[in-house]
Amino acid sequence: MELRGAATLFLAACISCLIFLWKRKQKQQTSKLPPGPTPLPLLGNVLQLSRTHLFKSLVTLGEKYGPVFTVYLGSRRVVVLCGHEAVKQALVDHGEVFGGRGRMPTLDRIFHGYGVIFANGERWKQLRQFSIMTLRNFGMGKRSLEERITEEAQCLVEEIRKTKGSPFDPSHPIGHAIASVLSAITFGQRFDYQDEKFAHIIDAIQDLFLELSTPWTQLYEMFPGIMQFLPGPHNRILKDVKVLHDFVTERVQMNQETLDPSCPRDYIDSFLIKMEEEKQNPQSEFHTKNLVLSAVHLFFGGTEMVSSTLRYGFLLLMKYTEIQGKVQEEIDHVIGKNRSPATEDRSQMPYTHAVIHEIQRFSNIIPLGIPHAVIQDTQFRGYTLPKGTDVFCLLGSALQDPQHFINPEDFDPRNFLDENGSFKKNNAFVAFSSGKRMCLGEGLARMELFLVFTSVLQHFTLKSPINPQEIDLTPKASGFWHVSPRYKLCAHPR
Image 1 (cartoon, rainbow, N blue to C red):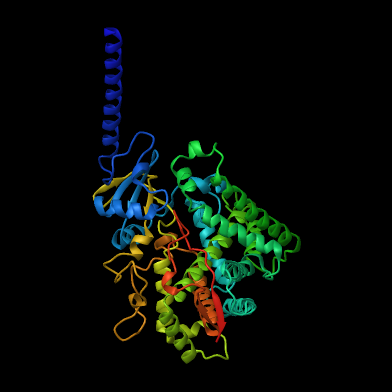
Image 2 (image 1 turned 60 degrees about the vertical axis):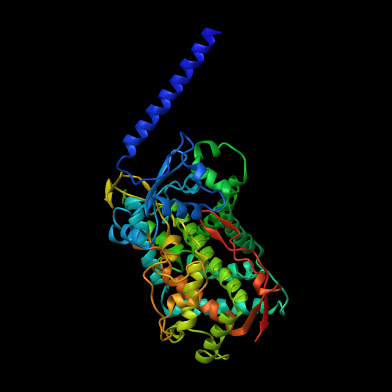
């Protein structure tokens, strides 16, 4: 018995010694890092992070440890930036060193650093420069693209008119309208609402967006080494991405067969021409893999970000009917009922412009942003961030910064209006991110939001089948992204 007791005491002493040595090593490694909660071996800070409200739990930690702090997602170290000032300082003032793309294991296992959004280094520079130039050539911010969006908005109006005021789920028609605009730019073709194949693509986009915000995905982000071998909902992401990948690959093959180098029709044609021009350049990043994955990124990101914002926007206007009424008064005054809205109307519609901005701010679609990484050892606010450190710039914390927005938890268009009722810019508005990695299609998204939003409200009054006071604005899922709740609306012709 004495021997057994001595062995137990010795084992306890060894375990205590190992824990002490591990903590001392952690302290030495993190002594110059921002502060944060003490991580557990292997688990990291999983106990301090909510699996259903990750953004809120990070903001709460920021209130305790300050606007710059460190958390561990499993064994993965992440520096988190909270509030407008910290986010701006990193993405704008130190944009070069914070310009790396951080890890996102859920998608890294699919994209492997290829494609314009998840690339780094020279690959990212080549693809981003090309994509910006190509989008501009195909009309981003120009009249030709505006006409295409206007036509699609009118198609959406006619599709909604078919409901004859009965309750319907707007997810698919809104998603189809925005996807068709992106399809025309990326693939040179729009698709009818009755096209079953395209409807399947839209379903895959919406499912992928939802799956990327579930607790299962967050577990994968924390423990990819284990989760990749386990069955579960997190593997549905592979299926959804494959649907998009196969669709884009088919479109690339079709374009290759009918390509006219003197007359590019879309993004894919332009990329194929660039591939031919640089086929002798061993450093070129223009090859089929980057083409397919860049097109997937543009199509998925451009479709779901805008359609999610519109879905949230229409839900908000059903809840706050007086705001909907003011928007329609401005539409009637500036546009009338006999012509389609135009982007030039925006400058004469400060209230509508403010409401759209407030919808983006309140819906907070990408609260954590897409992870960044520092590309070299970096001094930031007195701390040392080692090269390669992942950084979460909480865009949502900037959009809810009480120093820049009145009652940030509430929906209030006055955040973007001055005392005279004119539109007022707000520097903390970072719905499209900031700096070198900001959204490629910002101009396109702004145009889509305004033209589709005003076209629908020009023709319909949106009413909820339930009491407006009972409308729940809580996201359907809240992880890396916020997914708008599913609902039904009644569109009554005006």
